[in-house]
Length: 329
Picture (cartoon, rainbow, N blue to C red):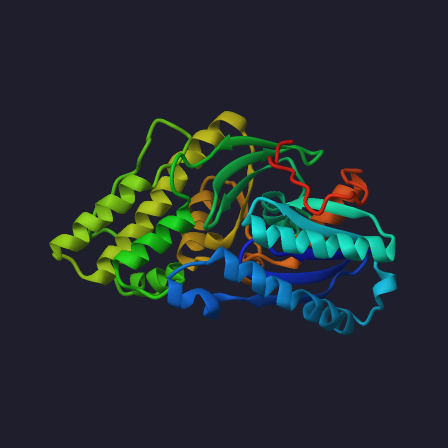
């Protein structure tokens, strides 16, 4: 079976072809970072308009890369939640047009479920049940995924997502957008034990990063430490926040496998610290390759195939936009 995956939830326009026998046959990711950099963040209107300009071009290039005809596509999957509504609308409308024209079934894919399953693409032996830890610009969630791929929310952030926290702290440091990679680069030259930043809600499984942002701002305003030490200590605090929550959930649910996905999972420092920490506890961690940490069509195509096998799909409806608002629904 050949599955087309379409991803336009934020500022990446991406498509991929997944072959149920051979894996990913073609994949294209078009980033909009250069368009949004001067604004210091993603501008929703610019993002949706650029998706509109790019989708057909990417689709035709993908068919060429995968060496298939559009009629060979058996199934179409598209991100329909969560994300920027204008960006989602463009992707869903394009997918519906294709599904109508090609007379193929259409799968609505939850973006967070797809991030979770991105870890399976390169780890075919990985099967649920496991814990899914999603860390991105918009989300900091922990789910339990059962063997039928049902998602149960166990933990979430009560304010900022961790990726948002990275970007806001980077802005305080006058670093360019996107801020996460810049903080990681500076932290390599710093001492992570120089400043003790707080871990919020220590007795809860939920995350909070607003207090950490304020603490970093206070340190920066005093100008007593190098920016490298601030960056390193900030990252170390993020790691401590992570394990404070994960440890509680692991102890309660007794699961020994964790997938870690989303844009922040590309951070090498956090990947290495988490892997080392949990390896000592006999817990397996699974990360996608760094290319698949960002938003991508690969994970949409793969997840669409999995959902199709579960028969979790819709026929093509008359409405141009359908929302599946909750991953647990």
